[in-house]
Length: 256
Image 1 (cartoon, rainbow, N blue to C red):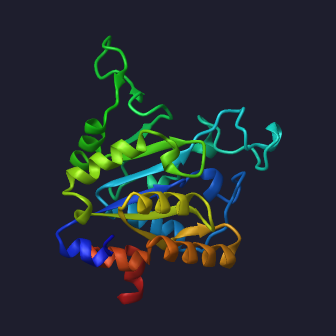
Image 2: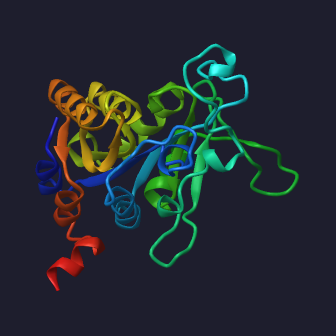
């Protein structure tokens, strides 16, 4: 695998991986709120507005979710599909002209069976293919977000073939770098996404100061140790945006 600097030196691209930036995790009134530093959400906004190719994942549950305390699990009800808690925060859905970013939510389904709405009235739903995913993410700048019910974005079986097709389309493994950020680290969904990408041979980094950690500093330490074991880079939002030639807005006041 290659570092951020090595991929960019090869003329490669950075693909943002936006993990579970949903109200139930990010907002203080969310049902599974993960406390974060004051700069995390501003960094999420900067990454959203400056990374031109982005994928990611969201938790979308039904009321019978196995992990809920109500159903014998260990967590409160959260991210029920269709509720405010399951919605992505505005900072990861709005561009620098304050317009909603076109986003494709890819449903949980068996590989090759993802269906999306009709393109023209009366034509019926369409099979959503890896080629369509590549066209939307690489060609049109849409965000491709995989719905899931478990930690890893790869628990949605469509993620593997679609991400593989995207990597091929940008020039192969040497030309693709996945920058993972969001909620949460400490052995949770951010780590699962990064490790899943690294296990598949993709160059990957965790943008650590654009994440929130379960269990605070201990969770952060766990993520760093696990990243080292998986050959995942630990980078900062400043390092990433500077490497792309895009100075973060939230740093500008300190430099004026």
